[in-house]
Image 1 (cartoon, rainbow, N blue to C red):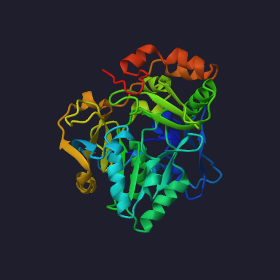
Image 2: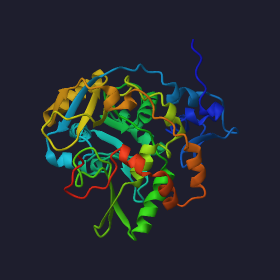
Image 3: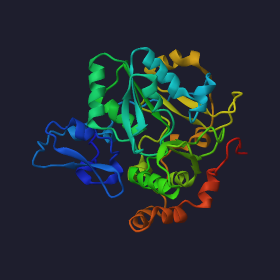
Image 4: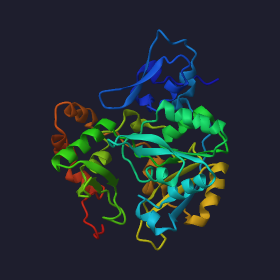
Length: 379
């Protein structure tokens, strides 16, 4: 039998921990707690006085995922409803999938902003609750023990469940609950997870700089562009809008990302989820001014769901160049050479100083990150 790899609980090697919460959830003696480190990421800590050395935490860790991966069929797709496209960051496929699940009296789990704009997973049984999950959130989402318990209870009650998250979060759900026709696991093409504490400090900087109390945040706002740009919109309680692009530059620099993102075992063609969704970055064959989605159907369960939503989307099979379209389907993001320097500077610099030093014009130009006014388009 192949020897199981050592994970964070044994080595304290940050490259082996996704911060998913599975070990805390599975521990029968509550010996494990998730604690935030100096970068704002969660890591498990074991109380040895409570630990009974049962090994459940190691077996359940997605670093040791035991399920077979598959190479799926790729589709390009857009939602038929233009209003859905306007509020989606890509082609609105998540809305189509979740609408189907909700129509079956199902439950949707996904990332939402809290009142203070921290990001965590929540539970939705209505479209209004689900709509809070729509749109990209470029920060690691926290999945609490309470949310995992809700998923377990919903499965016991026979509900159809859609779980959406990063590939490592989806691997955690698969490890905990296994393959189940009632459990639809949908990951997205992940470009790494930035630090919640950097995001917290950045929105505090935006609010202070502009003397505003934030009421809403929209990444890649389609009111301001149609395709291919990363522009942030911040809205006050009075409806005032501030547009920015510095957080997008930090995101694409990978400087604020979790350590394990640079060696992620899930950044590859073969997937563990039923469905994979993401932006289709190549030229769209659909006659629409909006972005389209990439959909990868990985399992029979995923195929059944995709067949159910075909009435709501325009789609066609794609034979695109994976590497050019979505390189994170081939390999993890590279670790920046100045990663450690950035985090050292974080302890002594203000956010405005960090932005000036690291959110450079070179990064913005490389990733087409510029501020566009309403009605303008990126050429």
